[in-house]
Length: 447
Image (cartoon, rainbow, N blue to C red; front, side, top):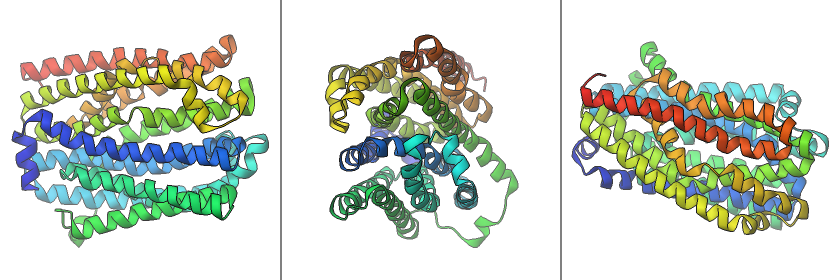
């Protein structure tokens, strides 16, 4: 931990960001490539209706994983600032509390999923022929959900410890194993949708076992029983910052519910399948931008805790420019290769006909989203839970959901696709304004 303190507080910021962002980006790349290939294999080996089923179930499981991810992100803000202030005891207690909070909350969500399966699947858009395969996929993945959540939580702790390479391996391991299990269970054992679910569940287990190994043998944070004793003030601090990320993920899940229903109403099962492909590309294509965002938070949080505000301003500037350039590259590639991307997933003519246009519109505002992402992450790193929460909700909650409700009635399916770039631009304007004034306050010494 001392080496991390020395590097985060005094090292060259561009090199630090590169050292943090590259492993994070590679990890996200493997994770999203796994999702893409998983969708391709399911589409080609099982059928388009199976992609629709995964599209319905994914946001439910994503919500459970989001609890671990949210607690990890919120907790790593506390952890990074504690390390920057050299408060090692608080750093250890924050890790212990993250483990307990993630375990308890995700087990409760798992039990809720088992009790209210039919209602939950219907809520998230399971209709017609989608219901049966969705239920088949749901149960095994739900039972393994807490393991995935703990893996997501641990990943943020690794980055806060300046162990970005271990975090990268923690993301790669379940991704690779999922593909191995996919081939075994779907292709060779012909287990269909259940095989896909079993492969996903076992990959969650592999990720959890890696996390366990890391904490026992590689982590600098050695926990004792006293660190797990309830500290309600610390729990509240972690919870407030975690709620920002959890609220965003919850709104994304709510958006998925709305989208699945609107897509089914205006375009049937074909349009649900199209969005299944688009949503996977949203996770995949922006992996370098998300890698910069994750690397940025640990560095900004540490320097804010160490009261090195000049370095905080500099890392904000570097991160925004770097992420913007990468986002422009991503959008250019989407424009050029939209049709080959659609054909890669499936050979259904109707889906292939609709997907390229959807991809181009959904990604249309990608060049400006770096300000939005880095801006909301900055306030979380600084420990400003309320501002971070509000800015995090601007795109999906304040703009995209209302647009999805309004535009399809006037423009049909096109109204759904064009809602995405409009929401991105509006959210960027709002977040950019907040970030500008925050940087001005840092320059003036008014925190």
